[in-house]
Length: 162
Image (cartoon, rainbow, N blue to C red; front, side, top):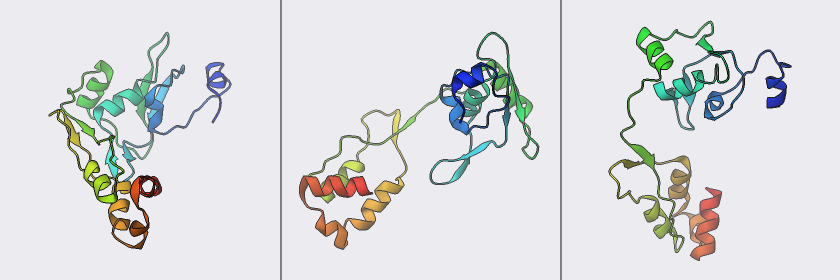
């Protein structure tokens, strides 16, 4: 990928990027063209939310001028309601966030599994769906590999591997 200074200097005419471009690049981009309105989130392909679309579209015109956004051939255009929401930055409020406990108990494999199942005290934080790393831990926890992981160091190492 070219350096941001190359883009800013006009040395680059086109930039191809993943949805991560919406996460903070401050580049002088004139137009954002969506090649897709979905993303693979590590488990499945899902539609981008209106807020995610807005963040990506918002990369255009970040500096002294308004930018534009659209879609490439083969991608369905946005409906009028979505266009208005993207242009006016008018999105539904987020009501809950997904959360997973980060205070893990490595005393033993069962303790580690139990700490991964913890729920938040806040009603605004819901537990994330079980992630691939947790599925892997559940799979190996009670077979030969899991039996080798004893104590703090064993549980930490097994979790790191998962």
